[in-house]
Amino acid sequence: MSKNVLFLILVVCSLTTYGQEYTLPLYSGKIPNSIREAAPDKVEKKDIILYSKVQNPDIAVYLPSKRFATGQAVVICPGGGYWVLAYDLEGTDIAQYLNSMRKYKISAELHILSEGEHGFGLGLNNEHVASWTNSLRLWLNWLNTKK
Image (tube, rainbow, N blue to C red; front, side, top):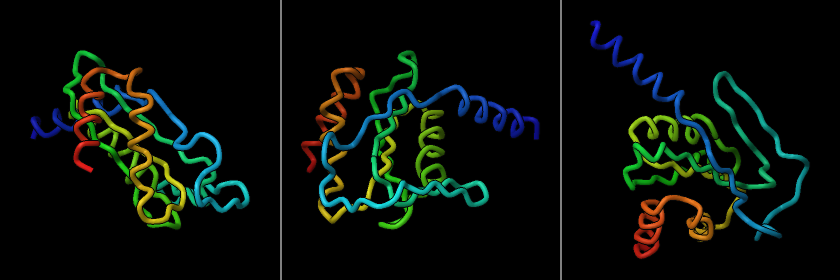
C-alpha cells in the first residue's frame, strides 16, 4: 500500500510543477464563419469548467522543462461538440497529466467551426514554432506531412 501512496503523491506533485507557458490567439483578425453574440459564458458545473459562445478562440501550449523535453507533442481539442467546451476536464487537465509524462501539450479553445476548419490551429502552431524548441518544430512538420 505504501507504494501506491508514494506513486499518488509523485503524480500529484508532477502535475503541479508544470504550467501553461503560452496562450496564442487562434485567428488574427476576423474569425471565419463566426457568429458574434454576447460575451462568452464561462459556466462551472461541479468541478468542470464549461465555455460556451467562444468569441476569441485560443491555443494554450504546455511545455515541460528543457531537461525533460522528449520531442513528443499532443494536440488536445476539448470535447462538447459545437455547443459547449469542457475546457478543464477534456483540455487543461489532460495537458497537465500528459506533462507529467514529459510530453508537449497544445490545448485549443475553439469556436463553433464548420467541418474542415479544424486543422487551422496546426497552421497557427507552425507560425509560432520558431519560438519553441527544435523538437516541437520537427514534430509539427511531421504532422503536417500526414494531412
